[in-house]
Length: 204
Image (cartoon, rainbow, N blue to C red):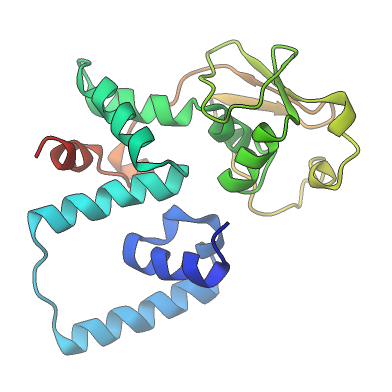
């Protein structure tokens, strides 16, 4: 697991969105100071390769993927009619991400651990594979034996900060279950991820 300092370093290079821990006032102030220093020194324009590499790394760290995993997702998506939407859907519908989007976990990393440690069930079947592909109609729930654990203690707290909310996943905090009621849609403005640039990297 990456220490917070390492996450801050990566976040400054790739953007705050890659780690939830970077999305706070302290990081924003630090990033602003760093940006001002760079502007005073002057900055050269980045190469196409550098731009593509950074965008690819942003996606990889945001979703916690290995290089091979992202490459395989991109290869499959590129063969479809709308590669960007296909790639976004594939990444968002991973079980660990759905757990995060439902609000079970405050970060994708925590959600990934919940799944891999067997705390989550899909349609009443226990899963341990974070990359499990969820579908519309699937119901994710916390395993009975895990409900008393501390990591789920604040699930019913409406004031708990940092919980993601998505229109396509509906959480019933009292029952500790969430249903996938739709599919995620891709928008560069909303996601901040430029998937076409990622495909440029892999098509070199």
